[in-house]
Length: 320
Image 1 (cartoon, helix red, strand yellow):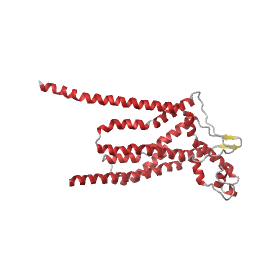
Image 2 (cartoon, one colour):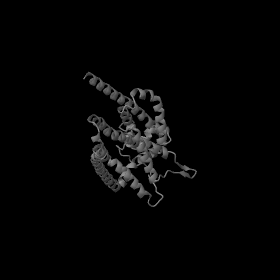
Image 3 (cartoon, helix red, strand yellow):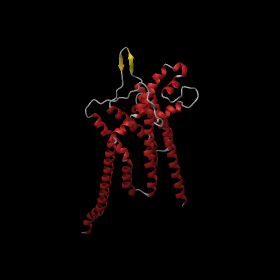
Image 4 (cartoon, helix red, strand yellow):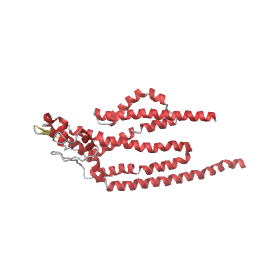
Protein backbone atom coordinates (compact mmCIF):
# COMPACT_ATOMS: atom_id res chain seq x y z
CA UNK A 1 0.00 0.00 0.00
CA UNK A 2 2.85 2.35 0.85
CA UNK A 3 4.63 1.56 -2.41
CA UNK A 4 1.55 2.59 -4.39
CA UNK A 5 1.66 6.12 -2.95
CA UNK A 6 5.43 6.68 -3.34
CA UNK A 7 5.25 8.14 -6.91
CA UNK A 8 2.54 10.58 -5.82
CA UNK A 9 4.65 11.64 -2.85
CA UNK A 10 7.64 12.27 -5.13
CA UNK A 11 5.50 14.37 -7.47
CA UNK A 12 4.16 16.43 -4.56
CA UNK A 13 7.68 16.91 -3.21
CA UNK A 14 8.97 18.21 -6.56
CA UNK A 15 5.90 20.34 -7.31
CA UNK A 16 6.66 23.02 -4.71
CA UNK A 17 10.20 23.81 -5.96
CA UNK A 18 8.90 23.85 -9.54
CA UNK A 19 6.15 26.30 -8.63
CA UNK A 20 8.67 28.47 -6.78
CA UNK A 21 10.85 28.60 -9.89
CA UNK A 22 7.88 29.48 -12.07
CA UNK A 23 6.86 32.28 -9.69
CA UNK A 24 10.41 33.63 -9.68
CA UNK A 25 10.56 33.40 -13.49
CA UNK A 26 7.28 35.33 -13.72
CA UNK A 27 8.60 38.07 -11.43
CA UNK A 28 11.83 38.43 -13.37
CA UNK A 29 9.97 38.54 -16.70
CA UNK A 30 7.74 41.30 -15.34
CA UNK A 31 10.75 43.30 -14.16
CA UNK A 32 12.43 42.87 -17.53
CA UNK A 33 9.27 43.92 -19.36
CA UNK A 34 8.90 47.00 -17.16
CA UNK A 35 12.53 47.95 -17.82
CA UNK A 36 12.07 47.58 -21.58
CA UNK A 37 8.81 49.58 -21.60
CA UNK A 38 10.28 52.42 -19.52
CA UNK A 39 13.39 52.48 -21.71
CA UNK A 40 11.19 52.55 -24.82
CA UNK A 41 9.23 55.54 -23.50
CA UNK A 42 12.44 57.41 -22.69
CA UNK A 43 14.01 56.65 -26.07
CA UNK A 44 10.85 57.60 -27.97
CA UNK A 45 10.67 60.90 -26.08
CA UNK A 46 14.20 61.68 -27.27
CA UNK A 47 13.86 59.99 -30.68
CA UNK A 48 14.65 63.19 -32.59
CA UNK A 49 17.82 63.72 -30.54
CA UNK A 50 18.89 60.10 -31.01
CA UNK A 51 18.26 60.25 -34.74
CA UNK A 52 20.29 63.45 -34.87
CA UNK A 53 23.19 61.63 -33.22
CA UNK A 54 22.95 58.89 -35.83
CA UNK A 55 23.20 61.59 -38.53
CA UNK A 56 26.58 62.75 -37.22
CA UNK A 57 28.57 60.33 -39.46
CA UNK A 58 26.51 61.52 -42.44
CA UNK A 59 27.33 65.12 -41.56
CA UNK A 60 31.04 64.35 -41.26
CA UNK A 61 31.09 62.43 -44.56
CA UNK A 62 29.22 65.19 -46.41
CA UNK A 63 31.52 67.84 -44.93
CA UNK A 64 34.67 66.00 -45.95
CA UNK A 65 33.34 65.42 -49.47
CA UNK A 66 32.41 69.09 -49.85
CA UNK A 67 35.85 70.06 -48.58
CA UNK A 68 37.46 67.73 -51.11
CA UNK A 69 35.59 69.43 -53.93
CA UNK A 70 36.55 72.84 -52.59
CA UNK A 71 40.20 71.79 -52.32
CA UNK A 72 40.45 70.33 -55.82
CA UNK A 73 41.20 73.71 -57.40
CA UNK A 74 44.11 74.37 -55.03
CA UNK A 75 45.42 70.80 -54.93
CA UNK A 76 48.44 71.62 -57.07
CA UNK A 77 49.54 74.43 -54.74
CA UNK A 78 48.93 72.97 -51.28
CA UNK A 79 48.53 69.25 -51.79
CA UNK A 80 45.16 67.52 -51.91
CA UNK A 81 44.67 66.62 -48.23
CA UNK A 82 46.20 69.93 -47.09
CA UNK A 83 43.55 71.62 -49.21
CA UNK A 84 40.85 69.48 -47.61
CA UNK A 85 42.04 70.36 -44.11
CA UNK A 86 42.17 74.05 -44.97
CA UNK A 87 38.66 73.92 -46.40
CA UNK A 88 37.47 72.31 -43.18
CA UNK A 89 39.32 74.99 -41.16
CA UNK A 90 41.37 72.19 -39.58
CA UNK A 91 44.65 73.47 -41.01
CA UNK A 92 45.66 77.14 -41.22
CA UNK A 93 46.49 78.57 -44.61
CA UNK A 94 49.96 79.51 -43.38
CA UNK A 95 52.76 77.01 -42.99
CA UNK A 96 52.96 77.46 -39.21
CA UNK A 97 50.34 76.31 -36.73
CA UNK A 98 48.39 73.23 -35.81
CA UNK A 99 46.00 71.13 -37.78
CA UNK A 100 46.67 67.96 -39.72
CA UNK A 101 45.21 64.53 -40.47
CA UNK A 102 44.77 63.87 -36.74
CA UNK A 103 42.23 66.71 -36.61
CA UNK A 104 40.34 65.01 -39.43
CA UNK A 105 40.24 61.86 -37.33
CA UNK A 106 38.87 63.90 -34.40
CA UNK A 107 36.11 65.19 -36.67
CA UNK A 108 35.11 61.63 -37.61
CA UNK A 109 35.08 60.64 -33.93
CA UNK A 110 32.89 63.61 -33.02
CA UNK A 111 35.55 65.07 -30.72
CA UNK A 112 36.01 68.18 -32.84
CA UNK A 113 33.28 70.35 -34.32
CA UNK A 114 33.04 70.39 -38.10
CA UNK A 115 32.67 73.96 -39.39
CA UNK A 116 30.01 74.45 -42.08
CA UNK A 117 31.37 74.01 -45.58
CA UNK A 118 30.03 75.98 -48.49
CA UNK A 119 27.91 73.81 -50.74
CA UNK A 120 27.18 71.21 -48.04
CA UNK A 121 23.51 70.31 -47.64
CA UNK A 122 22.16 67.40 -45.62
CA UNK A 123 18.79 66.08 -46.69
CA UNK A 124 16.90 62.89 -45.89
CA UNK A 125 13.41 62.13 -47.12
CA UNK A 126 10.44 59.94 -46.31
CA UNK A 127 7.87 58.93 -48.93
CA UNK A 128 4.98 57.76 -46.74
CA UNK A 129 2.99 59.96 -44.32
CA UNK A 130 3.85 57.88 -41.23
CA UNK A 131 7.24 56.57 -42.32
CA UNK A 132 9.27 58.81 -40.03
CA UNK A 133 6.93 58.05 -37.11
CA UNK A 134 7.44 54.31 -37.52
CA UNK A 135 11.16 54.93 -37.98
CA UNK A 136 11.22 56.65 -34.60
CA UNK A 137 9.33 53.69 -33.12
CA UNK A 138 11.98 51.31 -34.48
CA UNK A 139 14.73 53.56 -33.16
CA UNK A 140 13.07 53.65 -29.73
CA UNK A 141 12.76 49.85 -29.75
CA UNK A 142 16.43 49.42 -30.62
CA UNK A 143 17.44 51.97 -27.98
CA UNK A 144 15.18 50.33 -25.39
CA UNK A 145 16.98 46.99 -25.73
CA UNK A 146 20.37 48.69 -25.42
CA UNK A 147 19.32 50.88 -22.48
CA UNK A 148 17.64 48.07 -20.55
CA UNK A 149 20.36 45.49 -21.22
CA UNK A 150 21.93 45.79 -17.73
CA UNK A 151 18.54 45.01 -16.16
CA UNK A 152 17.88 42.14 -18.57
CA UNK A 153 21.33 40.63 -17.97
CA UNK A 154 20.99 40.93 -14.19
CA UNK A 155 17.59 39.21 -14.27
CA UNK A 156 18.92 36.34 -16.38
CA UNK A 157 21.93 35.92 -14.11
CA UNK A 158 19.78 36.15 -10.98
CA UNK A 159 17.57 33.34 -12.26
CA UNK A 160 20.41 31.08 -13.44
CA UNK A 161 22.96 31.71 -10.68
CA UNK A 162 21.28 29.63 -7.91
CA UNK A 163 21.65 26.55 -10.10
CA UNK A 164 25.39 27.06 -10.58
CA UNK A 165 28.26 26.06 -8.36
CA UNK A 166 30.29 28.83 -6.75
CA UNK A 167 33.19 28.16 -9.13
CA UNK A 168 30.84 28.32 -12.12
CA UNK A 169 29.37 31.63 -10.94
CA UNK A 170 32.86 33.12 -10.65
CA UNK A 171 33.66 31.90 -14.17
CA UNK A 172 30.39 33.21 -15.63
CA UNK A 173 30.52 36.75 -14.22
CA UNK A 174 33.44 38.04 -16.37
CA UNK A 175 31.50 37.19 -19.51
CA UNK A 176 28.60 39.38 -18.39
CA UNK A 177 31.07 42.27 -18.31
CA UNK A 178 33.06 41.35 -21.41
CA UNK A 179 30.02 40.88 -23.66
CA UNK A 180 28.62 44.46 -23.46
CA UNK A 181 32.14 45.93 -23.52
CA UNK A 182 32.99 44.09 -26.76
CA UNK A 183 29.60 44.98 -28.26
CA UNK A 184 30.26 48.65 -27.44
CA UNK A 185 33.71 48.48 -29.04
CA UNK A 186 32.20 47.03 -32.22
CA UNK A 187 29.51 49.71 -32.28
CA UNK A 188 32.09 52.45 -31.71
CA UNK A 189 34.17 51.16 -34.63
CA UNK A 190 31.09 51.41 -36.85
CA UNK A 191 29.95 54.83 -35.66
CA UNK A 192 33.31 56.60 -35.68
CA UNK A 193 35.11 54.96 -38.61
CA UNK A 194 33.18 52.48 -40.78
CA UNK A 195 29.94 54.40 -41.25
CA UNK A 196 31.52 57.78 -42.12
CA UNK A 197 33.65 56.05 -44.74
CA UNK A 198 30.65 54.14 -46.18
CA UNK A 199 28.64 57.36 -46.41
CA UNK A 200 31.57 59.26 -47.91
CA UNK A 201 31.96 56.54 -50.54
CA UNK A 202 28.22 56.65 -51.29
CA UNK A 203 28.15 60.44 -51.57
CA UNK A 204 31.20 60.42 -53.83
CA UNK A 205 29.21 58.48 -56.46
CA UNK A 206 26.90 61.44 -57.10
CA UNK A 207 26.88 63.17 -60.49
CA UNK A 208 26.36 66.91 -60.54
CA UNK A 209 26.82 69.47 -63.28
CA UNK A 210 27.49 66.94 -66.04
CA UNK A 211 25.53 68.21 -69.03
CA UNK A 212 22.50 69.04 -66.95
CA UNK A 213 22.35 65.52 -65.49
CA UNK A 214 22.16 65.18 -61.71
CA UNK A 215 22.39 61.91 -59.79
CA UNK A 216 21.98 62.78 -56.14
CA UNK A 217 21.82 60.66 -53.00
CA UNK A 218 18.60 61.30 -51.06
CA UNK A 219 18.44 58.55 -48.41
CA UNK A 220 15.13 57.64 -46.82
CA UNK A 221 14.95 57.98 -43.06
CA UNK A 222 13.91 54.34 -42.70
CA UNK A 223 16.68 53.02 -44.98
CA UNK A 224 19.27 55.09 -43.14
CA UNK A 225 18.18 53.69 -39.76
CA UNK A 226 18.16 50.15 -41.15
CA UNK A 227 21.72 50.54 -42.43
CA UNK A 228 22.93 51.99 -39.11
CA UNK A 229 21.30 49.34 -36.93
CA UNK A 230 22.37 46.52 -39.27
CA UNK A 231 26.01 47.59 -39.13
CA UNK A 232 25.89 48.15 -35.36
CA UNK A 233 24.39 44.71 -34.76
CA UNK A 234 26.72 42.99 -37.23
CA UNK A 235 29.89 44.47 -35.74
CA UNK A 236 28.66 44.13 -32.15
CA UNK A 237 27.79 40.45 -32.60
CA UNK A 238 31.01 39.68 -34.49
CA UNK A 239 32.96 41.18 -31.62
CA UNK A 240 31.42 38.51 -29.34
CA UNK A 241 33.75 35.92 -30.87
CA UNK A 242 36.14 35.81 -27.86
CA UNK A 243 33.19 35.35 -25.48
CA UNK A 244 31.72 32.49 -27.52
CA UNK A 245 35.02 30.66 -28.05
CA UNK A 246 36.09 31.10 -24.44
CA UNK A 247 32.77 29.71 -23.21
CA UNK A 248 33.19 26.74 -25.56
CA UNK A 249 36.70 26.25 -24.19
CA UNK A 250 35.35 26.47 -20.65
CA UNK A 251 32.85 23.73 -21.52
CA UNK A 252 35.61 21.60 -23.03
CA UNK A 253 34.11 21.72 -26.53
CA UNK A 254 37.13 23.38 -28.16
CA UNK A 255 40.84 23.47 -27.37
CA UNK A 256 43.58 26.00 -28.09
CA UNK A 257 45.33 23.42 -30.28
CA UNK A 258 42.22 22.93 -32.40
CA UNK A 259 41.73 26.69 -32.72
CA UNK A 260 45.33 27.14 -33.88
CA UNK A 261 44.99 24.35 -36.45
CA UNK A 262 41.68 25.81 -37.65
CA UNK A 263 43.14 29.34 -37.94
CA UNK A 264 43.53 29.39 -41.75
CA UNK A 265 39.93 28.27 -42.25
CA UNK A 266 38.72 30.73 -39.61
CA UNK A 267 40.41 33.61 -41.46
CA UNK A 268 38.64 32.66 -44.69
CA UNK A 269 35.32 32.38 -42.84
CA UNK A 270 35.86 35.77 -41.19
CA UNK A 271 36.43 37.45 -44.56
CA UNK A 272 33.32 35.75 -45.97
CA UNK A 273 31.20 36.97 -43.05
CA UNK A 274 32.70 40.46 -43.37
CA UNK A 275 31.82 40.52 -47.06
CA UNK A 276 28.22 39.56 -46.26
CA UNK A 277 27.49 41.96 -43.39
CA UNK A 278 29.34 45.05 -44.69
CA UNK A 279 28.66 47.24 -47.73
CA UNK A 280 30.30 46.03 -50.97
CA UNK A 281 33.62 47.83 -50.63
CA UNK A 282 36.98 46.30 -49.63
CA UNK A 283 37.86 48.96 -47.04
CA UNK A 284 34.89 48.34 -44.74
CA UNK A 285 35.34 44.58 -45.15
CA UNK A 286 38.97 44.85 -44.06
CA UNK A 287 38.02 47.13 -41.15
CA UNK A 288 35.70 44.41 -39.85
CA UNK A 289 37.81 41.37 -40.74
CA UNK A 290 41.11 42.55 -39.23
CA UNK A 291 39.73 43.23 -35.71
CA UNK A 292 37.89 39.90 -35.78
CA UNK A 293 41.10 38.07 -36.71
CA UNK A 294 42.83 39.81 -33.80
CA UNK A 295 39.96 38.80 -31.48
CA UNK A 296 40.31 35.21 -32.74
CA UNK A 297 43.95 35.24 -31.65
CA UNK A 298 42.88 36.66 -28.27
CA UNK A 299 40.37 33.81 -27.99
CA UNK A 300 43.14 31.25 -28.48
CA UNK A 301 45.07 32.76 -25.58
CA UNK A 302 41.95 32.84 -23.40
CA UNK A 303 41.32 29.14 -24.06
CA UNK A 304 44.99 28.40 -23.28
CA UNK A 305 44.62 30.15 -19.92
CA UNK A 306 41.53 28.07 -19.15
CA UNK A 307 43.38 24.86 -20.06
CA UNK A 308 46.34 25.87 -17.88
CA UNK A 309 44.09 26.53 -14.89
CA UNK A 310 42.26 23.26 -15.46
CA UNK A 311 45.51 21.27 -15.51
CA UNK A 312 46.71 23.05 -12.36
CA UNK A 313 43.46 22.19 -10.56
CA UNK A 314 43.79 18.56 -11.60
CA UNK A 315 47.38 18.45 -10.31
CA UNK A 316 46.35 20.04 -7.01
CA UNK A 317 43.54 17.50 -6.57
CA UNK A 318 45.96 14.66 -7.36
CA UNK A 319 48.41 15.93 -4.75
CA UNK A 320 45.65 16.32 -2.16
